[in-house]
Image: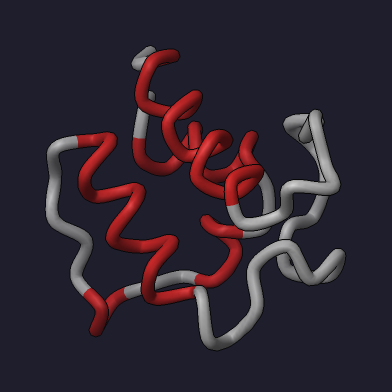
Length: 77
């Protein structure tokens, strides 16, 4: 697993929310509004940058983006 990659994604999310210092792997980042519809595309680009792979916007499964754990499983395993 690419733990450095998922840490980059965690840092990106936390960087957008300076009031937070931690983010547990199972926190739903969409329901908790840490990532909203306006920042979702930026999240995808942050994941692409951290993983080194391109994500096809036509085949995105929102379930893969619910938490750091699901992001890690989908893009860094």
